Image 1: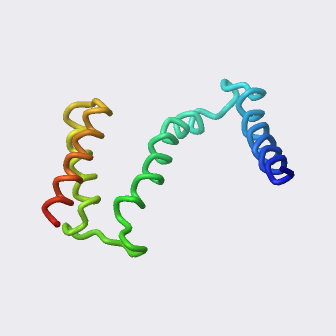
Image 2 (image 1 turned 180 degrees about the vertical axis):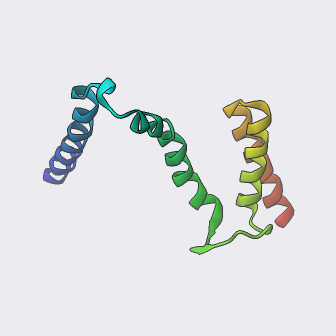
Length: 105
């Protein structure tokens, strides 16, 4: 049980440290360049989460057309550019991945 208390305590401290920056700071006092840069944080975080899953296969970088995850990711990106609907993009990416995996056997 004490492990859970430590985990919850560490999570609370981390959350409060990060939240205090947002809650107590006045957004109007941030430099304009900083506020503009914050607009790119969600895209950067999403890329940092998604790209390793697409480009790394069995612990090694695989940027070849034989990588079904990478090809499906590119297909999903192309659909996302066209339709601008996340659900359709995810569905297209999953359909492409399943089709490529079925073709690969």
